[in-house]
Image 1 (spheres, one colour):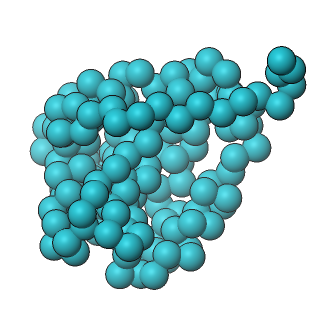
Image 2 (cartoon, helix red, strand yellow):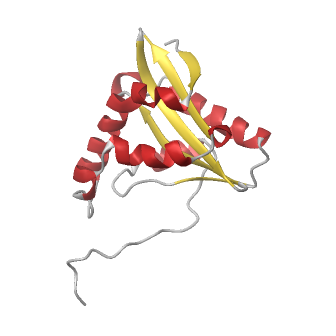
Length: 153
């Protein structure tokens, strides 16, 4: 399947909102321990970071197919670290290479900006993402654990 790739400005973040909401629902449904946090995590809250990052340190890449935005990748740079902050491809377009192309675009952008490290965080329960990211050259470095408030020891 063919797709058209493009870069959006910060003012166009709203174009990816429906896809981000699908990603948030996927995280909520797949979470083993902290699914409730996704119930109150809104697109507007997520975009606070993207609105505070200098424009030159923000990249919003999209792919369009069949007249719709089929996927996106948001990346940011802080100091010498590039981060893939959010990536989502509509179910119907997975396996077409769109996700890999979006990630590759961001990695090239990080390289142009001389990032020393490139990182991505994977939400608990999104185990399928590990295989995808390994194909893109990412491997687990450490596991970050968080205590649930209601747990007592």
